[in-house]
Length: 144
Length: 144
DNA sequence: TTGCAAGTTCAAGTCGACTTGAGGTCAAGA
DNA sequence: TCTTGACCTCAAGTCGACTTGAACTTGCAA
Image (cartoon, rainbow over all chains, first blue to last red; front, side, top):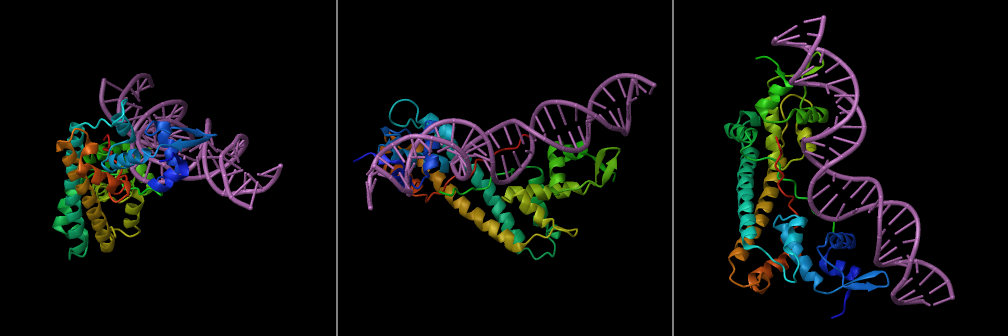
């Protein structure tokens, strides 16, 4: 199959051209050459981009992902790293679940003011002592 | 009980003085006066800070939290808003759970390269098509 | 051949929640 | 009274992942 134009990669991957340039600059992907001044990409870049998306979704930073794509063709994905991430996710999930339950309760609680609800106050204490854990940064959906 | 010095609030709440000043500037908390140039806080500020921590943990932004503390003493916490957040959390949890399971599988998968594992490839496709959902920003633990 | 949409580079901007630094003030203990 | 360390203000910096803008070049359809 033919090499792809940046717009085509963008279209097929759902990733903006500006992002693709950015990723190339970061060394996450690479173009196989140029037609004039314009980048050409091997179709394989699509798989690589999927891999990057996966990594991001799993909570890896671009830098961490770059490390996995270290020198040498195929991605070197460390199984330990994966387990570690899985466990990290697990902890996050637990925190969020507790939070969700708290919120649900607070939403349904009959007390006139949340401050009068024992459950709410309990959650409050937990949050205050940091047990619930601080800012899980808000999911920021990309504009694509 | 006596009014508190900013250092004391910091110490009791586990929130840095710089953050307290920042919160005051944002209108999230307020000091009751000054001793010389130094802020004095009512002990109630601690409950307010707990509330802020809770809101943050639930995924509200500081601006959203500020809205809840609208004019008029007690926090006006909208039950609808809480349910909405709870549902949002629920969706996030689902995404993360899928991700975690995928990671676990990938970590345990016997295939020599992840690329040869059908499950991995399936997850990959999901990520590529955005089904898994993009960057849940990484939890960034405060330095405190 | 020409027009122009789409590509290119490079620097700077954005968002949220803070932190840091410089330079100044002052309450309180010795 | 003097010292000093904690506090103050205000501006700027940080982090991550991109986006945006300005200024420029060019492949390709008409």
